[in-house]
Length: 612
Image 1: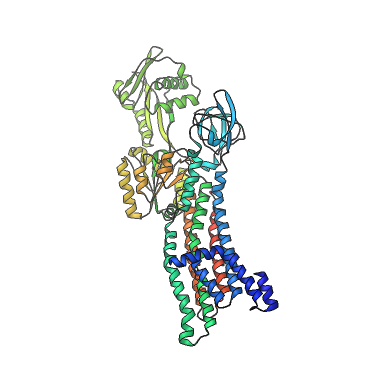
Image 2 (image 1 turned 180 degrees about the horizontal axis):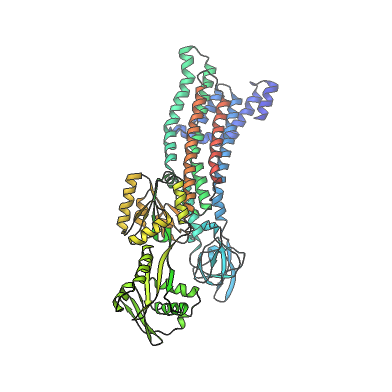
């Protein structure tokens, strides 16, 4: 093109050398454009390449070779910028791919050797030294270390790992030597699933993208007819100059190219999903990203979502004259023989206090169905169970002061157990499912972000539900719900607010998650069910990622709307320049390429949204 321009300056624009150079420029720069454009033209499929092909051929016919060459080169630059920006947005996924090592040190039998990860088998022992990345998903069988799981879960703080703990491929072993039994093939690891799901999500068409594609399908032929009208009507009916109006028609054709419109949505979707994945949030498609941005109400499961889902001893109240540690040791020794779900909480408390409960010998141990258990320690019979048990075995029932304490604890949503002998209660224990540390602040942030209602749906009893609901600050509480009741509640919310999200653990909340507009699963890392059933998975089991996800989705929605409005607006302004005959091919292609570049850069702003 430069040779053509220089030749035109020396020999004149109409010289053969100038035309040949411009022609060569058009062929070299536009070869791929023309092959696609001509194929589409014969198939009567009208897209931007069809428009550009006709515009360039038309420019050559009317002798505007220089303009044609400029159009082709500017279009090629625009295409290159577009693909660069999409590549930049996809880098987050490529960086995920590079996270897991390609080979690892393993032990088979008595032999240790380094192998490619593709050749590692389930059951192999992985040896991970300090500072090395873990190559495969597995279970720790030896060692103690802290592991940085940021790549998978987005957690900034390393997590302590010891025997029987799960570890993930791509995470960093920080300080100790770990031996890990491999539990998944390389293609089934959590990181492999994340990459696969994110790539699928980025390729999936979002509602606004489907609208743009549909719009472009009808818009392109209309622009072609409009351009034909601009080229033909003024000369035929108003005595206009043919060369001038054919040129205007071609310029209208170029400016009508919907490049910016077509790129406006996918660049925002790809960027947002990539950014979310880097922060430990897996969004399984553009449709879910857009729906999340329009959510008005969020329902929460209680156990395992707003709470940890693991019962802990919150209160231990020994009575006067009872040796605190000695009596707790006896209770833990009795519960050690129990299958009751709350027994684990008492044993955990005893372990934390380093009490030797396993050394005690229990005689005549027996379970009292539905009420508790009993057993002899040092020839003395002890009972542990619900307060109702002691109402039966104590001659005068439970003393008034203890009844008051029990009621107070129960009103706080705690399960109370009494422990003692046939003649007296020696202590009270309260057990509860602990509320997550960040549950309250997350609910507050969601309300400040404009969520109209946060509702807790739980199968637990009303007392516990109200206590926890008030503690975390949800706007509504529904308790004692069966799975089908949760489903009904979600349907009611949808009829009231239209778009509703449900946050659960992805297993027992499956019907409610499916019925909601967006199903959000806690703890996607290592949980196949959560990855499969939910639309969005919070990989680290971290509720604080929810406001970030909502904010990112809303920003993505806003940017998509901005891009579509700007793309159509700039087309309208440029096409209006046809009326006074001011539109040139240069203005047309700059308007098109400039718009494409601006919407691309606007979409890339989503990379800057951080999890605060």
